[in-house]
Length: 192
Image (cartoon, rainbow, N blue to C red):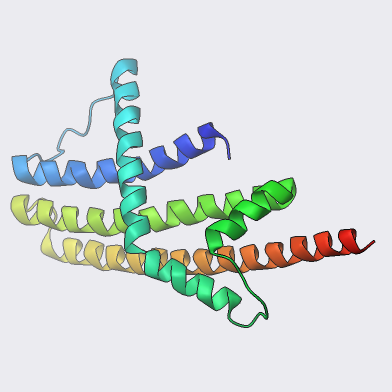
């Protein structure tokens, strides 16, 4: 994965963090967003990108730690019906990355999807909570509309949670299959 790709991922994650953080600050200071947000000049935009990047790093790490049990469960499920010793997932991933450029790119793409899904579960939940706090403080959105928005927000959080679980499961199944394939290819090459 290139540095630019990782930077873009973390900025995408950080923009979500900036959203819920802005809603929290708006709730605290009573800001209504009536006139919308003013356009950013180039310097402000670059500063925003820098802040979004840092927020993205924080949310990515926090989401990883919160969802580590899911990751471990999916890795365990991926190796449970295979015979033989499997090293830790990180070692399998490293082996694939150095052994096959094509499979390595696939692993990196899957890891990228997983990172974004995992972080946006947290971003979505925190955005929903910040919106509720903001609206309770200011009463901008009518109660029935707010209830509908909260129900949609909960549904989105649940769907993102399911997507994260599914992407994680697929990632670890792919790691297992790629590792077995590469080990089998290396063993055949050595036997010849």
